[in-house]
Structures are given as structure tokens and as C-alpha cells.
Image (cartoon, rainbow, N blue to C red; front, side, top):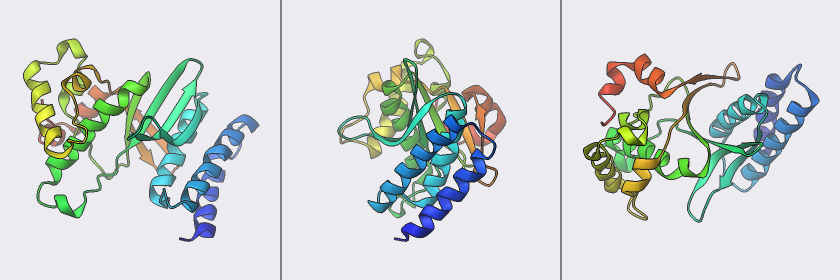
Length: 218
């Protein structure tokens, strides 16, 4: 663990993104930066993930949100970013495409299940739920999450649940969670430039075309 290097890296990135910003934005970014440093000292976060959290935080802060990172939602769930503004709350979960070695032979099924389970489990804790990813990764989002609950066919929900059940059974993802969950936006995180590009779910599907069709259920 190199606390000095981590501190220097997140400070350099934060300073780059807040040049010329108001004192309020700098203050809110400092909160996130210091929180990440404390989490690093406890061996909870790594620099690559923290850099993406910092870029997402700056994007939300510029929209007037107060942002926390690694926020506990319940006994088992911790979200990457939890942002509040007035009575509203937004959750951002960052997915990098990492596949653990034990799923080397079923990476697509595993990653699709992980994305689906996050949408189903996390979105109920906020008014808005966002998946974020770097440009080098493709999110295999099941297409039912691009439709409102009333338009989700039972067979598609069952298909997603069966996929999730292969990998997540403690606790399992419920039918109701899949039916009622929501995905509002996809963030493309460019750490090099310290910027986020927002895409609605339909635009994300359209942009990836056949590529995502081959990876997403429903």
C-alpha cells in the first residue's frame, strides 16, 4: 500500500478537474477526495476504481449534487457513488468489465448476470440509477431494462432471473426486483480527460448495435 502515491494521484486528478471551478464545487470534490484517501488507508479502494469514482463525482457535483462514495445501502450492498440533491438521490455503479479467474470459461454469462443483478438490487435505493463504464468496456445490459416495468414480458423477466440465479443465490435476485428496477442512464467515463459522457439506455443500445445484441438478454 502506497498512501503517498495514491494521495498524489487523486489530488492531481481532482485539481485538474476543478481548475477554475467555484469554491463550493472544490469543497465538495475535496470531501470525495479525502474520503477516498481514508478508504484507501483501510484497503477498501484501489486507484483505478477511485479515479473513475472521482470523475463521476465531479460530473454529479457540477449538477448540484452532494456526493459520497462507497456508501452502505443495507447489510450486504455498498454502492460506488451516492449523490443527493434536495429530496432526490442518485446511485452510480461503475463496471469495468473485470472477470474473476473462476469465471474464465463463462465470462459473458457472469458479466451479464452481474450487471442485471446490480440494476435489480441497487436501483430501488434511489430515484435514479446509473451504470458507468470506461470506453474500453461494453456493458451487456439485458434489453428488458430499457423498457418500463409494464412492458417487460414475464418470459424475459424469468430468463434474467434464471441467469442471475446461476451466480447469485445468497440472497437470490427476486422476480419483483427485476420487474420493478430501473436504469436511467449510462455514463462513459474518460479518466484521461476527466469527463463523463451521458447516454440514455436506448441510445446506448443503438450505439453498440449488433455488439450488444449478442451480449444482452431479452
